[in-house]
Structure formats: structure tokens, C-alpha cells
Length: 263
Image (cartoon, rainbow, N blue to C red):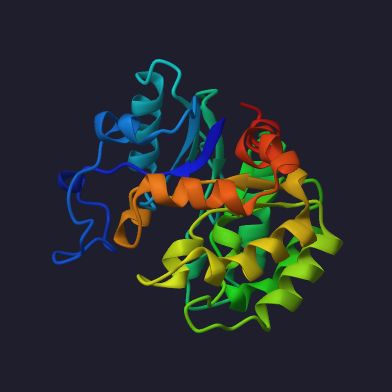
């Protein structure tokens, strides 16, 4: 099994502006703390949380010293640069611009960004799309502008579960799933559901993701340690396992991530 999305950070690095004192996750998280969380999972994808090239190198160092646990890294690159220097390390599988942090919803469609995404595709790398509901209408245009770019939507595009809101998220997800071959992460959903979440609150959204994408385009991610703001790793894993039909688990909990990232 594969955990398709987790994070590590060291505060002293100083490149995490979104992490602020007072947050429950404002401390260091390392691989020694992550390993005991795993529930039969044998590999994982380590994902960036800082928009710096230095953090990408930091994550690649962790991956290369992980004795095979970290099978891929999703880093960061300046997609607006005229010449992008992607690290040559084979453990680098993709990049993640933090699209949710850009006030301009259409930032990813800017000509200089599309040029960078074409370079990403040509380098054989993938895009993790950290998006919100507001981005869903523009994403089919991205698929048309950069054909052949492998893309995975992080955290189901962050539906407003705590508010009980289904539209326009559902319409956007259905259109995106139908018009592209992109994948989607079965992750981050409990964070959107609120501290008092339960499986019943999640099920309409997870069932919908399964219906739209199918198990072959969905991958489990813990989003650890962010998930710990509302849940333990174990509780989210057990809930996700229960939400996915038995016949679909081999794909959602392993095969989709392996194929998409080339693990």
C-alpha cells in the first residue's frame, strides 16, 4: 500500500510562512515520527509545503535516506522562469505550485506558467494541483493548453464539507473527471469536514469522487501531519478504508499512486 500524500518539515529552515506560532502543528515533524503511524503501508509520496527550491532538495535528501519508504517526492519549481532547473534526482516525481495561495484564480493559465508546465511535461514530471472549488471551472482549459501533462487534484479540490455544501463543487468535479484523464487524491477531506466530523458527513463526497473518477484514478493520502489537527492517522486511514468498497481498495490504496507517479 502507498500513502500518496504526506509532509515533513523543520521550522528552523524558515521557509514555511503559512506555519505560525499557536497552530497545533507548529513544530518539527520528521520521518521517525511518521513511520509508526503507518498501517501496513510500505511506501509514501513526500509533498512540498514551501515554495522554495531549497526545500525540494531537503525533501530529496530525506527520501534518499529513507531506506525505500519515501518512493517519490513532489517538490516545487518556479514555473514562471524562462529556464527551469529541475533536480535530476529520479525520486523527484512532480512539482506542486500552491495554487490555493494565489489570489488570481487564473494564475495557472498565464502564458509564462503554461510554458513552465510544458517544460514539466517534457521533463517527464507531474503536476500536483493544490486547488479549491473556485479553480474547478478553469482546469479543463489547463488540460487543453498542456495536453499530455499528468495531473492529480489534491484533497478532492477541498469541498466545503463542514458547511454541507455540495455545489458548485460537484458540478466542477464531474466536468473535470469527464473531460480529462487526471487523477484525484482521496486525502485532506477530514480537514475540510471540521473537528466534529464523522463518516456519515464524509460519505456523500467520497462516494461522489469514486463515482466520478473511479478507483483507477483515485489515490489515498494521509495528509499527515496536517490531518492531526482533526484526526489521528489511524482514524483517517480506517475511515478511508471503510469508505472505499473492497474491490476498489487495491487501486485507491496503492496501484493508482504507483502508476501515476511511476513509483
